[in-house]
Image (cartoon, rainbow, N blue to C red; front, side):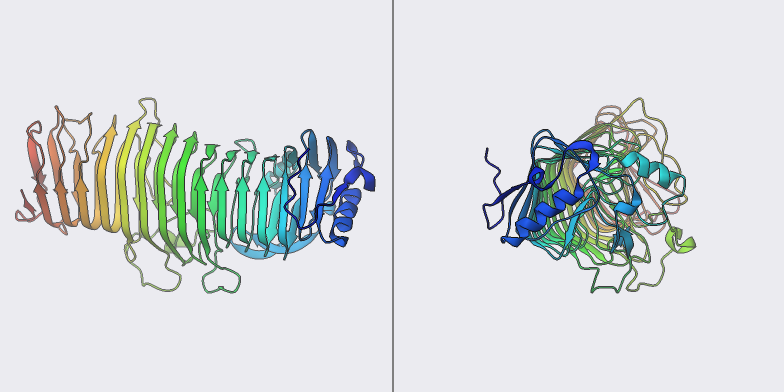
Length: 507
């Protein structure tokens, strides 16, 4: 049997040699912890859990140790809060006292959790306590390492987490691969993988089915606290399947320390509320930049692509969060820039093909969406596309983009939508090319521009049945050019609302 230990020593310590029973009734954490200490005493090695069910309190790992959970072995977390001592950690962006995780460690190097076994947090008891308001201290995470280097988690099944499932905090060089994470779809705050202020993280070949966000990148929620709120940076997420949950891959809303250099590729989303999601709000500050997502397939999602800087959830921040007017820019103003999303196929979309909602005082900067095909669901019911105060329910809407500076839309097809396929408002410097809908509506334009400054629309083709191809509204609209489009099937190339200067559009 190849245990493939990733520690400097080849020593193997069987927990049953240290008193662990594996019968699911006796508390086995003393025996497992003794095996960990013995492994540490010889400079590292592998702590081996053979088949069996090991009821445990919180386990604290050490450097240069592999915790190997063999096929048929289950680590079963105790439901007694006294078995999870308080530690200083972070919960929902704020550094505070929390219960220790079921498996974790602080300040470690070269630590591994691997095998073909199961880590089960028995989360249902914790979820009920939370729903009854009986959890004043944040619930335990299932697996969480803090301030560690060279962390490796692979091949295990993690299920029924009391709260976040795999949650590295301020770690460097993290690999999470071939992990299955399964929490009920209605379980509260059971995010799958949540790197928080981490750098050099590689997530691959995982299956995630949870009750909150499948993968969420975070960096704290209090601007100016940069000693603790380090950037979450240099992240790759590849070859994963994600089911249910509020979001597939989410950045934020805790992003005060910045999130940057993120690549997401070759992933499938099924039944998640949103696919790719970036969220924050005034008061959080921070920068999200250099995000690349491509080769994504989505099915039965509310909204495949969502960016929201008016995020309202939890402490709402009164009118500061919801105000649509421009406010003074400060350190607490969030910024999003240099985002690329392409090669996306989304079917059975319910609410909107995309919903992008920036700030009037700080528009998203440099957003490019390309090679995307979205089909809306004929069975959809109205719902809100994002968590923001004042939004009206939508149903089968197209691309809705608000408050963006430098927007590129290329080779995008939207079908079975109600209303305009592309609706842009308060956007400047637009290049829109090869965008179309095979299901136009005679009473709605294919493209609607409202208060758009500087738009070049080219290389588009109007399908049979198109009414007006382009509608321009809003007195701030100006410098809009139609060129090189095939509009012979459209009733009109463009229409102007009454308030629009007649010289706004050139064609």
